[in-house]
Length: 488
Image (cartoon, rainbow, N blue to C red; front, side, top):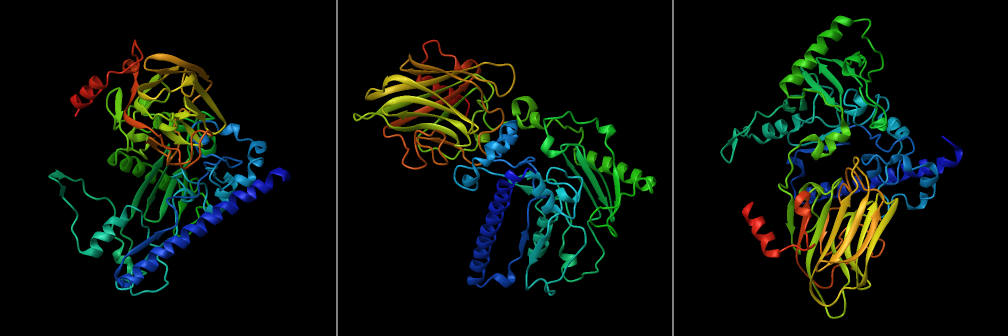
């Protein structure tokens, strides 16, 4: 890496180390609390260090805003862009992620990273199990193969509970996995979880009685940038993990019969657990409109009311990559309008409809790279009004731009271009708020606190498709309620 970029790379890991220290400290507080209650000795605790291998989603350089990866904008996070933000890394304006090199270093001695479910670098984690009254051994290591799906079985057996056969009268599928209790007091106990398949984005592997057969299909930091190979062209590797636990010596050419045996077993397991057909179109998988995935919000409209907040994107009508409208019934106080009417996302990407210095205003935050604004010519008058933003999507694919138009009581009051939009996601944790922006602020016109609307919000409608088209640019509130109730 260039010498002048190394200070930023060092800061990435400093920030991550600080995060790990912070996390460990507060996990310690939880343990202290359990001990204070006098129940620590008889509490089964799992401390799983990571949910998979270290992540390579930060790209070669790392990133200031991880959502740029999911929106296909990571190329804009150049070394110059990143270096200029060194002092902001880890602060409230960032949503940072370390570089690929750090991920590979943290996964050493295993190969690869998160998303590469084939190799241990993408799946294997250190785990601490603590239960003094149930585990006689202290500070010992167990090397029997276990998987995260074994945890619930272990908890059930430890608590003496049966597997639930039905929940509220609905028959349940059998819980997969094997209890780990057998290994707690016997380091030499024969392994019971002998077969486990892995698959993510076409990266796949199989563990069986000490052997692993694996194949990497997609490189995480090149995801969406290159066309992946045909699945039949993927190269499989074979490892004897009883002798080579770090998967360092590929035995596929020395023992092709064993490799073929495990490849067949992977197909059997993949069929059994509904992995097939394989699908490596990651970006399409993220977009429910393309993937055909069921969504929580049915129809072309959604009604929202004052007091609703922190709604995740999956709980809100999907207005990305399409024309849409946002309509709000509000009451403006005599002193003039101020504050957020509705917002979605954060300073790392999203949109907000709000009142600023008395005027109606719309901000589209394009991944923190640029904000597009549309503002009314005149102030919002006092009294009850219907305000509306109509977005005419330009089309031509995902993440394209459009024109945003503002209306007050059906009268056009402002219009402006939005050159580009976010195709996949605004934020992983900042949601949608009615009457405020409770997370990191979408617009630089207001701060993270004291940004609530100073009037009354009677209701808000999000609309897409035909429902977003109103000839007089107004929504009949009674019809909107009637339509919502008809869908109950």
